[in-house]
Length: 486
Image 1 (cartoon, rainbow, N blue to C red):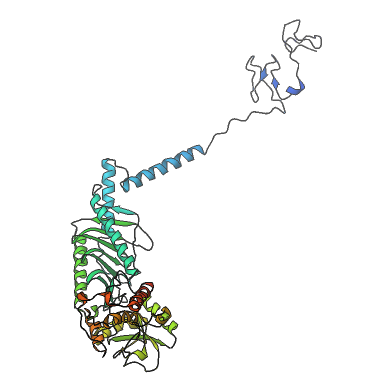
Image 2 (cartoon, helix red, strand yellow; image 1 turned 60 degrees about the vertical axis):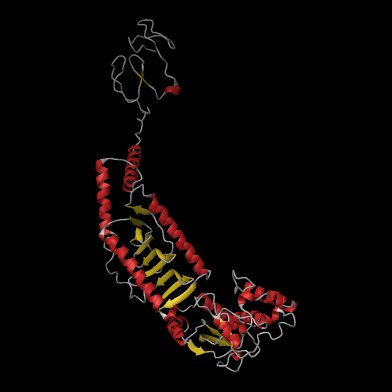
């Protein structure tokens, strides 16, 4: 072999040239991809053109694999940019909604200007006509609130929450039938001992801009709601509007803007309008003959003659009971009567349903228009006198069975209890009950109610009274009323 430096012939497998001392490196088959300098034998990096030790030009060798440069991560800048934009957007929204108490003039001015712009373009002009039929009432509607009241005004928030709780309670008690129901025109009012609790006004087939509702505490307005294409809720405290909650599109968007105790023109106009309309409606109700008590719990417990609005008749009592339940579900104080018990009704036995007990014809006529909306065939008829002499003629001589009470109406069961007292000459504070028993030949009124004692009852009468009272309670006809006070 020859020395690659001096070119002289040397012995094979020699590690050093004996003439010039050059180190001889044997190419190993496994290192075939590693390129050596042809002059000095230095290992060279792939892809270089000159030896880094002696400067000898290098010819690229086939099969040498070059090392690829490291790839750059092109996605990292995009990820960083995304997080920066998200953080900026979150910061802006927090400032806009007042979630970050920061005092930077630029941001403070910007959010204030935009809040004022929202006020002007939102609810400020909502006294104008909307022109479409009101939608359904938005009971207990609440959404994501933004308020222009101060952060420290917790009193308004507390009072508004209390008012909304009272409104919810009233709605539940109305469903349970705890209030007296009256109608005037197309409007409905619920009262407690003649004091208004709630008043509802429909849109009257598009004639009104809003479907309106009013809620009262001790006769004083505490809450009102105007429901239409938009929704307004008004919270009152001692006759003053403390919050106007506005929903621009309540069906689509639950966002609410609260205006608290403002002196702006729209705010004061709404306050004046709601209070005036409430007073006018209550005035109409008070002067209307339709305000005659038509209640969920009918208080006319005697069988005195009356006017009825008849909506159904059947020879089957179960069918009559089903129609009665339907009428009650629609807000009527429905009753079932047997025609043969009354002098002016059919002399054949029918079970008939009336929507209420009306003491005069005018009260029945005022109510009839409302009834016709649900029962187009309804009509008015006077019952005449109750023709039976007794409900249970021998209740003082035997124990009665509950099976005997199945076909009796609420009024008949109540009268059967009063018969026990009337037999002993007790007088009655209710004039209608007194008039009923005055018409009976066997009745001899002698004892004032305050002087009467149940000690005069025999064992039959004591037990029969208990049975009748239990029947009333089981059927929901007696609530919170002592069995000893007929």
